[in-house]
Image (tube, rainbow, N blue to C red; front, side, top):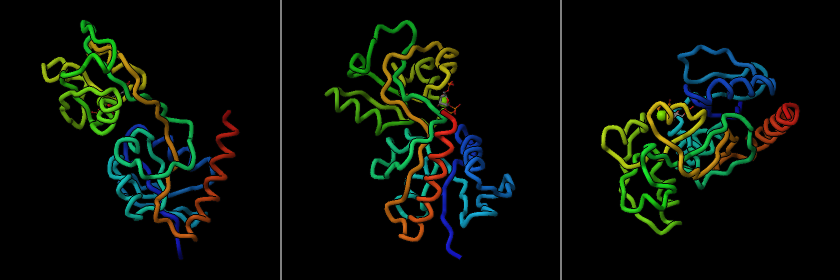
Length: 212
Ligand code: PRP
Ligand code: MG
């Protein structure tokens, strides 16, 4: 039987809320935690648990039809992927931060400086917009440590509660973008599966309306 394939973050900040909203739209799955794939009991749908950063490529290739993913990941790696619904949870910012003692007041003040980030494409978009250059140090995690160990003058990373910035003696100086979980679809989705995702999208809309 044909099934709609939806990617969900395997572990991390979006995982639990993604599973929760799927449950709210009536999709129930048997969840063996270490299983990478699960079938819904009551809808022709399979869930693929994937790493965040891999999801844009899976969408592009049509390996999955749709995904619940952070908008920030699409800005970084999937600006060719269409967002069909904003889901209203996992809200965060992608921001520039510097040590508390720094005089820098915005990204422009980091012209010619070093910025540590896991979001190089996003930072580059904004550097280009401002017509400035910076040296990017690309690291995958614990970005906030970089200024303290002398690796960078500033960082660009996700800010949610702000506690990681605070604990590392950093201050936010510019918000590059605001992000939340979104429903995105593959450019290669079949007509048959488009009909299924339309149904899912309609159910999401009802749940989101109900939450307001
Ligand atoms: C994420 C992100 C920030 C932090 C923001 O890191 O990279 O560091 O959360 O959240 P906060 O503002 O609520 O503190 P995560 O803990 O996922 O670890 P990682 O960067 O090592 O992947
Ligand atoms: Mg982090």
